[in-house]
Length: 252
Image (cartoon, rainbow, N blue to C red; front, side, top):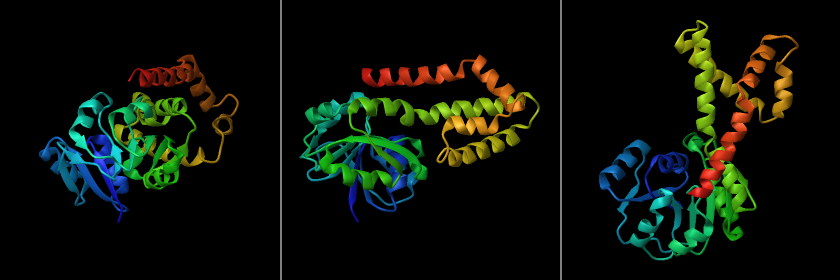
C-alpha cells in the first residue's frame, strides 16, 4: 500500500486523511504527540506518527497541510528532498513552496471539507509530470478538476474551497426562515438537509438557470421568494464573496 505523508494535522488534514485511509498507508508529522494521538483517534485508523524536528521527507509523497504563514518555520525543521509535494495551502504559490522545500515536483490543490465524505470538489495545478498521480490521490476524496494556471486555482479556492461555508450560511438562513414562520427547528433542519441532498444531484445534470426556471412558475410561491432574494442582493453578495475570497488568497 502506497504511503502518504501528511505534514500538519489540522482539520483539513484530518478530513483528507478520512478520505484516503482505506486506500493509502498514512503517516502524519506534527509538533505535538498528544495532538497526533488525537488525530489517530479521530481518524480511527492506525497511523505512523512523527514529530517535526529533523523529519526526513526524502523520496516521500507529501501532503502539505500547515498554515500558510508557518511554512518557513516548518521547512527549516525538515530534511531531505521529497518526491512530490501536494500543497493545500491557500494563496501559497508553487514558487514559494519550491523556495522553502526541496522537492522533485509540486502540485497545488484545493480540496474542501467534504473530503471526509469522499465528496470534495478539488481543483489542482502544477507539474504535469505528477498530474496523473495527484489526480489518483485526490480522486480518493471526491471529484477533481485540473486547472491550467495558479490564478485559476486561486479563483477556484474562493469558490470550491470556501464554498461549503457559504452554503452552510444559506442552509442555516433558510432553516431559520422556516422556523420564523412556525416550523419546528428539527423539522426545518431535516427538510433543509434533504433539500441540499436533492439539489446536489439535480445540479449535476442541469444548468442552474434551467433548474431555477423549472421550479419557478408564474406568480407562484417560488417567484415570490426568489424576488425577495433579489431584493436582498443575494446574487451580488455571492459574486462579491468570490471576489473578496480571491483577493484574500492573493494576500496570503
